[in-house]
Image 1 (cartoon, rainbow, N blue to C red):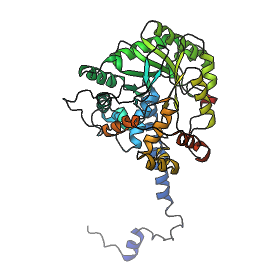
Image 2: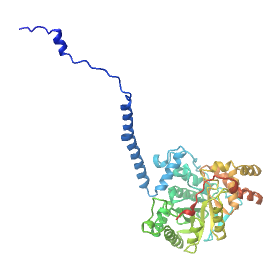
Image 3: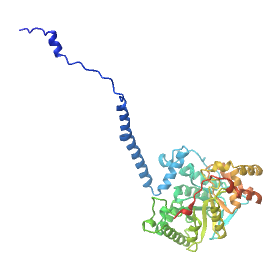
Image 4: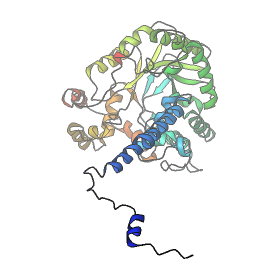
Length: 408
């Protein structure tokens, strides 16, 4: 049978009750804010931590973590992707060396410093660190080859710079083109993370193999002690920084007796560090330190002591250093002298250090700059101008300096 149609009252009963609308709470955006906060806490921060952990692990896994750090960060600061990430040979910079370029004559009036082995160290060289082009093997090869063929002979390297192989390849090519090995003066350095007698003996052999050389002209202790958070084979044996320096020095002395290195020296050493090594094995041939006209008095005192005790000085960052070079180039006193001599401010600074009895190792990958640096032998500053430059440390303030006196 057909059922009767539902009445209006019945239809009303079937409908859901009407919803009462309430105004939105004043914190109606809080759900969105919470979601952003959640993304930051649970996605972004863990991602950053993961990247940092992976980066630190990558650096720490390298044989020379600090070297890899510099090789990565210095190009990045110049806006260049580092070879440590993208590979070597992709960086622009030092041009190719022509195949028909043969060795040019050495500079006239070139000066030398006498070393304990009776060998002479050229008072001008080229530093192979601390600029982007020093960390690309292709550009390092070109830089060293250019410098040797243009008449330079003094190359300054280090284990920390991670470019031994490229330097050795360039030296071999320069020798093939007519430069004699006896004329080339090569310096390298062992970093405190590798201090220790056996470690030094092993690393020196590794350096010779990487460089393809039968001997190294000068090997330096790169810094007095390890940085916080780092160690060395010697330190792991429970020895003090002073004991590690002495163990390393004994190894360099043994290597010198074997003829594998010709001279031993130090770098970034304060006077107290030098005193503890004097009379222990090989004579200290050299102390390589940051040295330019704006250095404080205690650095000048170290230089004076070394020179009075037959320890030669090599000045790195002779143009003011990475952070202060522009300030040095703009110095009013140096600018006036530049005008007087019709030479670059950099020439004035290099010649000042040379006339102070130091070797200088300015760094460049530009062949034109190499030629200009090698022409500094044409210049000589008067005694009055030397004294004027000597006083700059008292008037020019704010120059950065590595104070190694506090190193253990």
